[in-house]
Length: 145
Image (cartoon, rainbow, N blue to C red; front, side):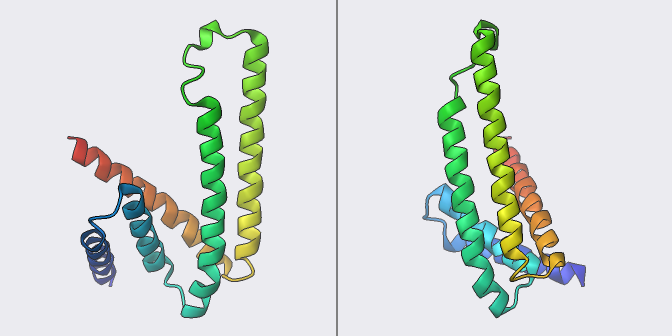
């Protein structure tokens, strides 16, 4: 049974990669992620209809936050030894604010999901996202070698 599911997942991923080979890398990754999550959660059509708008809105919020984080910290403070204590304190406060915002967004996301998915599928989603990231990193490392 697991072999069939694995084969099906691999076929879906391969098909998706080949179908969207001409898209920019970010679009490819997003398409692969959608296919992977869909496969892992085994969403009903009703669940999928309610789930994807919530998921996409959450992803958009998190991307804005990551963009903000890159703008604030992207290479600005490469030499920490040259920072004054006041500058370091300001950076630390900004980092804490961003982390709090991430937790707030994630908590709101889970609360919304509880209205459309059973808790078990929400846990599966969290696990599927981690598995996808891990596989993506493995593939990236494999291609670099």
